[in-house]
Length: 574
Ligand code: HC0
Ligand code: SF4
Image 1 (tube, rainbow, N blue to C red):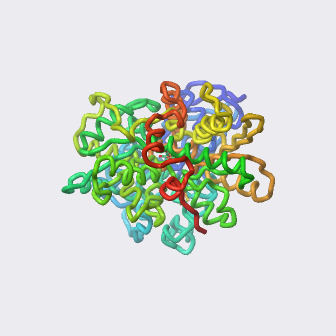
Image 2 (image 1 turned 135 degrees about the vertical axis):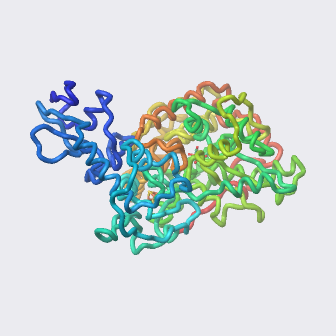
Image 3 (image 1 turned 45 degrees about the vertical axis):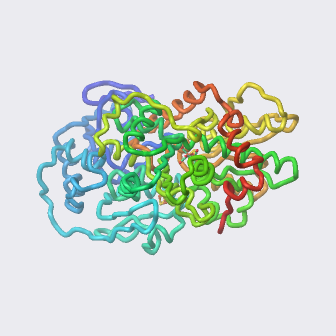
C-alpha cells in the first residue's frame, strides 16, 4: 500500500495504482482522452499518448500523464495547477488545429469526447492554425464509416481491434503529419477482414469511426403508401435505450420503447425475443439431433454475425461446426413475410421489416445474399439502439412520460429465455433449458445456469442431461473466440455446446448501443437488468411459449423439419 497526497488530501491505495485511479477514489476529476477502461479492467491508454491527463507532481520537472504514472509513497500531486491546466488546453488546441470545426453537422455532436474536452477546458480560440490533413471518407461497408479527418490518434480503436478482438484490421500507419489509423494498404473496410463487430466505433471518442445510418430509410418506409412496416427490437435494446433519455443504466424500458415505436408510426411492433425462442427450438433440436445421431460436436451458436465473419475469414475449414440456424432477427423476418403475411392477408412484397439492434454487424448480416426466403429479403433495414433514440428525439416524443404498452401479437410474446440472449451466456442457458426437457421429456424448474453468466472471457461449466455430462463453454470478445476455435482445431477443447458472442458481455455491449465513454460498470448494470427481466417473466422456457407452439402447429410443422430448414437455416461460406 502507498500513501500520497492529491490536492492536499491524503489517500492510501494499492501499489501500482495510477495517479488517475487514485484521484478518482477521491472524486477528483482529471480530464482524459485516450484513456478508456474496458469491461475486464484492462485500460486503453497505451502509451499515454494524448497527454490530456497531465498533472503536477512535486519535485518533478515535467508534468506527468496521470493515466500511466503509478503512485509512489509520499507523492504530492496537484491536478489543477495553472501549468497543468494550460498544458491540457494546449494539447486540445493542437488537436483542434488539425480537426474539422463542423460540430453542428457532425454525427457525434453532443456525444463527442473532444468537443466535451474543449468545452471543459474553456477553449475559445485557436492559436495554432495551419495545414489540415485531408482523407477520403470510407463508406464501403454496410456497417461502419471511417472519416480520418476526425481522428485524434488516441489509438483506442487500434487497441480494441488488435488486442481485445484480435482481428488486426486497424493500425497506425505513416509518420508525423501523415500518420493515420487505417487498414493495411489503406484498403476500404469492406475489403478487409473486418467483422463489423463495431467495437472500434464503441471506443472512438470522436466521429472518426461511426455507423452507417439508415434512419432516412426508416422514415421513408413509414411514410410510403401501401406498405406495412413491421419493427422488431433485439433483447439488448430494452436495457440500454433508457440511457439516451437520462435513465440510470440498467433501467428496463420495454413498455415505453413499445409505446414510442407505435408513436413513430410502425404498423406492427414485435419482439426479436419471440424469434429468439424460435431459434432455441431449432438450435436445441439440432443439438439433440447431433448428440443422438453421432453428429458433429461441439455445436456452436450462430446468432452473432461478428463471430461468423471471424469463422468464415479465419477458420474456413471449420464451417460445419456452428449451428445452421439463422440468427433470431433473420428468422423473424422470414416468419413475418410468410406466416404473418398469410395471416394478415398482406403481400410479402408490401411488408418492410425493420430491426432495432444493439449491433453494427447486423446491418451487414441483413445484406448477406442468402438471408432471404422465396425472393423476399428477411430483413429490409437495420438501425441501432442509438439510431432509435435519435428517431424518438427527432419526432419530439417525450419518452419519459410515455405510458407502458405491450408488443403486438402473435410475434410479440416471448419467454425469459429469449430475453437473456442479450447477455453473454444467455443463448446457451436458454438452449439448455429447452434441450434438457427435449431429451428427458419431463418439465422441471427453469434451469438457471449461473456459471455461464457474467463477462469473464471464457466460462466453462457442465450439466447432467439424462445421464450425459454435457460440457459447455461460453466466450465473449473475438480474441477469446479465436482462442477457443484454435483449441477445438487442436483437439484440446472437448465441449458439447459453445456460445460465442463478439462483444464484451454479449449483445448488451454491442457496437450500436449508447456510448459508455469508458464506464464499463454500465455493461454490468445492463446484464443485471436482463436477468431481472427473465426472472420476472411467467414464461421462462422457449418451448413453453404458446405462440411458438402455435407457429409450429399452424405453419412450420416439426422443429428442425423440412419447412423450418428452408426458411430458418443457412450455410456459411469461406
Ligand atoms: Fe443479439 Fe440476437 S441476442 S444477436 O446477442 O441470437 O444484436 O440483443 O438481437 O438476432 O434475439 C444482437 C441482442 C439479437 C439476434 C436475438 C441473437
Ligand atoms: Fe476491428 Fe471490429 Fe472495428 Fe472491424 S469493427 S475494425 S473487426 S474492431
